[in-house]
Length: 323
Image (cartoon, rainbow, N blue to C red; front, side, top):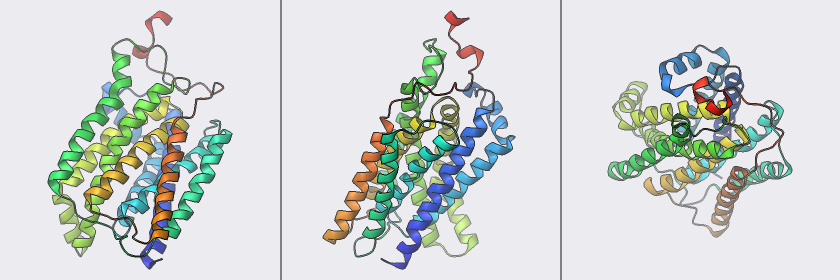
């Protein structure tokens, strides 16, 4: 195992831990806020930015993203993304301990499987053919990103459209997982595009030397603005979903979508390769397969009927027949 790999996997684990602990902190803060209304985006942004508890969670998520940018400069996507995806196990544990969401036996098995996945990834690093790619064709990046953004926005906004068209028959919660799945798939695609932009920006750290040169390169890159736009849209949609849906449903669906998207698209766009040695290749493929199967299993978990009542929704979302 190379020296970079010794640092890479722990740094990816730090990124996953900081990001997902921040997510749980945001969920706790959102539970104490009035229901968010995306038709009043300035009010939503002001509510979030003036809440100290939410800002603490957001700061942890930014730390996780910063660690992700750094680790992608010297580790390939096929190593980093499954490690980042392992943070779902932490979300499940914290959703039980902190948010009091039920963690079933199947979910506990998934937590153990994610730990095995990280061990397999650690054993698969090193050797030839495992270098990180840093550059992708702008044309292919555009061809992949634009349709993904459009589909992500349409899918994530579909539960909101049903509300505004008067077809909303209650409230978003764990007992109606369809809304959580739509939010998860849509935000997962948006976050996956943001991850591609992060990967592209990581190449600037390799090509430029000195803080001034790096800052100038980042500001001149279109990927910075793709990252900012996708992250902002996904974050707003994700906050609404977090406030009204079970974290143990939303997070796995969003993560499996973003992880699979980034793993496949990122490895191809940045011309990365799997290990050439049969042993390490087998470990790497096994780790990726375990991560994908576990995340799919988590996304298919049925909601718990004993879940606590979620945050109330605004009056304009209420079913008129209930008034």
